[in-house]
Length: 175
Image (cartoon, rainbow, N blue to C red; front, side, top):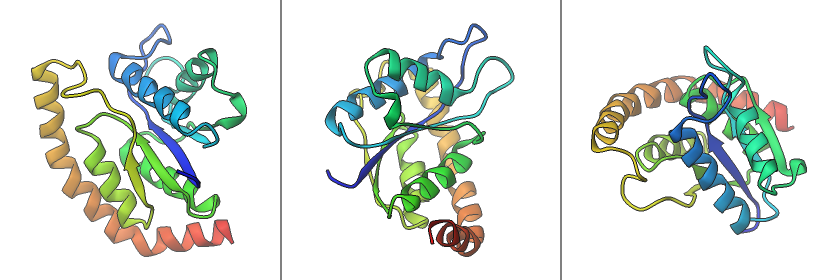
């Protein structure tokens, strides 16, 4: 798909600087997307947590080690949560003329990301995914689905309340 950008959403980094299982899964999705869209720039989104390096820098290090050109990688090391990453992804897309975003995150996380980006006028498609729960335990999957059930309406209200000012800022940045 021409005019696409790949966006990888962060997750925890372990104290030794290695990705958590969730972040490792998302990096793998990003690697698959990078192979499918070899010309697409890749936004690695995620700030440093309480310990270790930023999520974005861990993603970039692993992607580069696995053969993805560093020239394709753009790091968003400021975003501390999904909503901030969505706003960064919208800015990234608009700065490139409104490119289509291929979302690399877990299946349970994708609906919220895509809904919020859609509210900001950004077209999206899901990136490659592992079938089913992606290897996560039933307990983890259920907990994440419950979290998303609360987060979706909460974040949507925030995006809709700030939509006009966010879009105006993005238009000014791109213009």
